[in-house]
Image 1 (cartoon, rainbow, N blue to C red):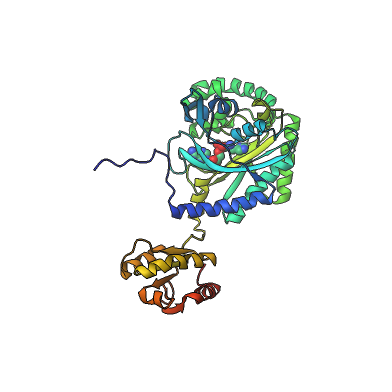
Image 2: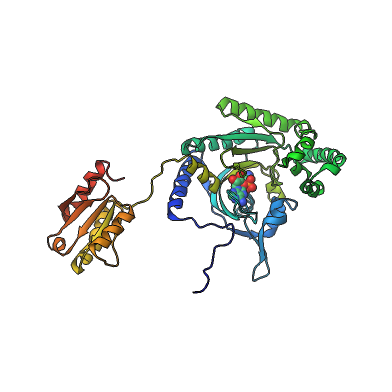
Length: 426
Ligand code: HAM
């Protein structure tokens, strides 16, 4: 026997039981986004590599070491999208729906980053994201955060906390960066390898270091907040007021800098202590400079994205009930005449809104009942030669009493619906 081929490392199969959990979350999220006037956009998974270099930033971990990039057969440099914001902005500029317009959009789908796989961190993962264009004021930032909070409630999720920071404008950040560099240079011999690597390219990311030995140096670093321009400071204060008024608790984390370069002003993360190291479930912020940076007419923008795998993990831990898609009825068919009649009978039951799994491929009664049981159906319908002759079926209750009653085929829909009404079928 030849060796079986395995999936690519860090890329997971989602089996039906898990998919059903995902579908439930996706459906609830969609309803929440729609309640705020956000509309779905579907974007290509492949984009030109340059798009991500120009938006996420050449000096970020994502662009430097995590992208799945390749040359296609026409020699074009392409990348499997590592996130959704860049593509959304690209599409907005290309289709002309950003200039002087307010747009509220959401998307969902796979993203790709060549990271070291571990629990909660994969090479193909899935995001649900939201992007809003054309609104500069902090009420939009508040709305985005309130949408997240509403989703957590709708999903029954607990234990998520919100951290906020403001990165100011690009200009104020340049001033801060200079100041930070000056300080970090004085600490150079105490910096770890990661920080030394970031020192020249992206010193702000040093603030995000998780190394305990770096914490003292970071704590004594000049504060980004002290270097904020007045307008950004006011914008941030206003956001705080909106959130307090809406009853959404948050903490300001002056060290929150995010791993993508396009952010300006507000950045935020929702984290949990229940997922170990990969604790950020949702993250986002404002990126007022990105549309212009990618060649469009300047337009303010903000958004967020959440990791589906992490959301599902968290929900599974909290053992939320969810409805699986199981057939109401398994239709067992014995003999030629029954098989002939059965496929049509199944269609009639489906017309009435019931989910039917039909026994295809024959087999004896025992084998078919075993399959019926495994299907998770509430009832088995037994249709043999005799029932086919008398246009009836035997209805066997597989979950409750185990009883079996004979019902005429033309009364079957009413009979099953009546039992549905009694809550025996969901
Ligand atoms: P991000 O922080 O890179 O932001 O990713 C957002 C979320 O995606 C993370 O908080 C995490 O839940 C999930 N995620 C990221 N990488 C992985 C991975 N390797 N495995 C599993 N889950 C992962 C963005 O992508 C921005 N585009 C968010 C945004 C939208 N900002 C403004 N608009």
